[in-house]
Structure formats: structure tokens, C-alpha cells
Length: 77
Image (cartoon, rainbow, N blue to C red; front, side, top):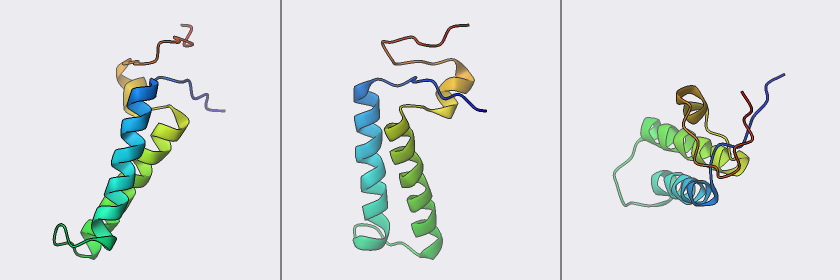
């Protein structure tokens, strides 16, 4: 079983959720930029990924590189 340890602080999580929400709204719901079906799909995938990582307080790339912005270092190695 995969264990996801918290590796993001509150500010990082908030920014990811806000940016992810903006990415989901930019593509299909606004005329801010010209988009087609493929760019809408890409923006949606990026938005959902940002929202999920912010909600779970876990970033795979942070884990891969050993980067941790969380004050609670619950990763015991």
C-alpha cells in the first residue's frame, strides 16, 4: 500500500487549489484565451492534478526530489 505523507504547507496547498480552480475555469468557460478541445483537456488535467495535490497535501514531485515545505516533518527515514 502506498503511504502518502504530508509534504506541503498551508500556503502551498492554498495556492495549488486556487491555481487549479483557475485552470479548470480558463479553458471551457471563458474567452480569455483561444482554446480548442486538446488545450481544454490539458488545462483540465493540470487543474484537477493541482486541486488533488493541494487537497491531499502531497506532491509526487516533492517526494521524488526530497523537497518538503511542511513544518511537520512526519517523514521518518
